[in-house]
Amino acid sequence: DTDVTQTPKHLVMGMTNKKSLKCEQHMGHRAMYWYKQKAKKPPELMFVYSYEKLSINESVPSRFSPECPNSSLLNLHLHALQPEDSALYLCASSQVLGRAGELFFGEGSRLTVL
Amino acid sequence: SQQGEEDPQALSIQEGENATMNCSYKTSINNLQWYRQNSGRGLVHLILIRSNEREKHSGRLRVTLDTSKKSSSLLITASRAADTASYFCATPNGNKLVFGAGTILRVKS
Image (cartoon, rainbow over all chains, first blue to last red; front, side, top):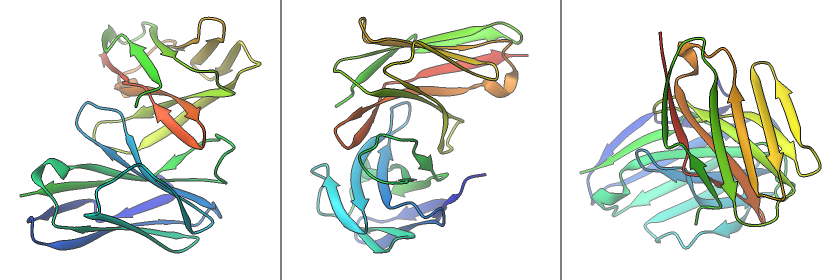
């Protein structure tokens, strides 16, 4: 079990759909992350929020839109995705950004784009 | 871009044997972390070793760090079928944590 909760666990969407992935943590962490992971590859960083402000955007296409409504929640809004965007999307949190400490991961949202 | 490279890419052993995975990285670091990922699940933090430490233990895990060679190893002793997973080293790069390519470990019972 993990203290970072991601919903939904599985999502299938068409290229014209708009959907959102959600992430929640109640550990009081002030840094939250989105990673993308393709099969048999390591996780790749997409976005980092620190104290609810976007701190890092790894040149992610605009069809992915992150949002951090409060210190416990992190969303990833999806629109006009491509089949190659199919992947496991992992949310993580850490106490603060920049101390290179442990990341706590959710179980991920498996996204399939048709 | 990946900071760490791991070898072997895949490792298959019998239950009870030891498993050793290696990680090499490119830049100076203040710590190195190891994570485990069961198939299709999230990553779980295993251990963090700081740059001023040479060896660290946690249960059946032993991690070493050689900053002169920019390398680390993870040893799992007396492996169990439940240890079957992917193992990633991770190093900080500025404010980012960058993961190595990973080693897929299969423990046969």
